[in-house]
Image (cartoon, rainbow, N blue to C red; front, side, top):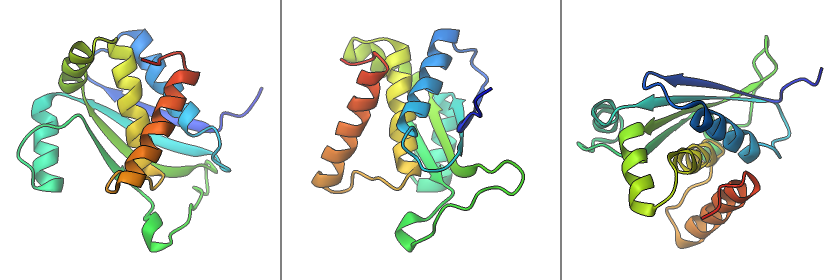
Length: 157
């Protein structure tokens, strides 16, 4: 039996359809495919109300957002990955996704909820890896990575 390189703990109190859950997991695994070490990511599916509270608490922004990432590694400070002594996996951090925002955005963009959740999960995972979109160059690079992962998972636009 092949050892699983990526562990994704999905915390979902909103009873996502199995297709959407599988899509998110597959997208995160695909985004981490080239990581040179085994990884763990925790994904939390929240309501807009819970996301608003998190956004207010951690970013001082009093409104819901679609995705928040909380990296466990400060890549900019030169921190490197440190595997857990018991599992051998590197914990990358948490990704919070608003199911309400995801559903609204899927409808607005005319694609499936599974595709939108996959996109948000990949976007959050890339932030855990130290990528950002604060500059135009970073935005273009992240978008290209996001779209490449979604295309490989059969979720292109």
